[in-house]
Length: 266
Image (cartoon, rainbow, N blue to C red; front, top):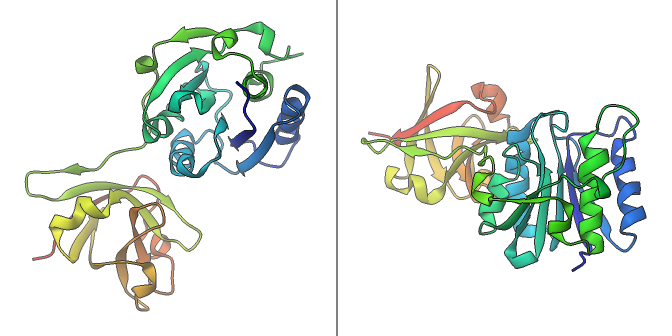
């Protein structure tokens, strides 16, 4: 089985040759496969943000290979995970970066540890896992090499689980959430969807650190007036705190990982 598309995520940036080298390696092995650069600006070693980004993206990606070169110096083995009855294979480090995406598409059929020297590039110095292992593996899979030929089969249940946190509902009905990301407008994305907070009503109290704000729940961030903050559903189906004509992240001093408790306004 061959694949026409490799969707490429990395923390390599564009300041050196590494992204271009990966493209060249893939082209030499699989010249008929297109590489789609999704993002190379993930924070260096930020496996959590990468896991979230890949999970958000997989429903929209073309069938094929998902290549994640993130925290390539980390001491975690490189793996390939087959999903969707072979429609796609996710290639990356076993660091949790692939876990959420695998769950989104219904779980893994098979997984391997990339141990075969035949499908690696010999390194003249220290191993660069993205250049020497992950990119060649993605290319050979795209060109039709069987998954099991690239290494040792492993139990998918033994892979490092997703790094994306899940919300918790306590006995009072309050929802303990966490900031997953901040977009360019400063909207603060939480790890909760509309259904999770429906029981709290149309007006919610958000509490974090020593701060509290009362916020309306609205359909889109366009419904917020200047100087106000609302909870609005974002394009990924999650709730975001949005400021009117400003950055909610800056004004409320919220960043990735901030814990936010959502409760009913009384």
